[in-house]
Image (cartoon, rainbow, N blue to C red; front, side):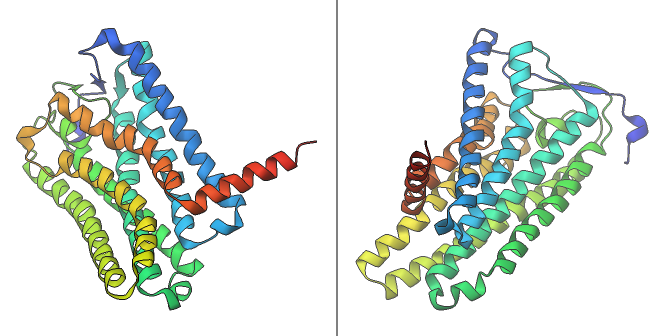
Length: 313
């Protein structure tokens, strides 16, 4: 990588929540609880999809893959944050920081495309119901998932290279709880304008591009159900889409505020709160949003409970 011979920084220091040391144990308990609940909630949805035949549809195939991604997503950042809070060890190795950033960018970018694929699935289900099973066959669903991971992989590689190809020869203190692009670039001892522009364009393509795909899909959905369906059918169609729209709003809203803004506004404590929204809070809320607002999921849960009770000796 360019500038590697000039890199003298071998580790970074993640300040995290060092400005409130008296709350470290409290925050540790809170984040550990959130992490544990999120982990088991997403694992439960995956198991529910696997063993509930009525959920073997494209929509729940995407939801199961989304839950798998969320498990990896929260496992990339939260464990290190918990160690920092409990033990006070705020250091992270240079390449460990690069690995954490790469995994985060891979999963966040892939999530954008999976959310867009889910919107495309809802578009076909509502706008083309007669040929829905033909369009969204098993092969098409698998290709959409594989394509999402591949694009996320490429975006993460490019962004990580653009960040860690910079020379770091001075300060190594990151005012954040994980290795994110803006605070890392701010530590580089060279002009980062080109890297910032390149990274911004990639983020723009990933966030704005997938968000526009989602908006277009739902625009067609709204037009179709308002034009061709009865009031009862409109309510049913909206009930199947509301959960996805809530998740999209949480993820894209906080992500856009964080990455699609001027560089001068980075580095504030507010950034940590915004980041918590899409790295910790959203993964906790997502499985409950999809399950509590979904009749088919609630029915599958009831059937699973009944089958477990009948299986008891």
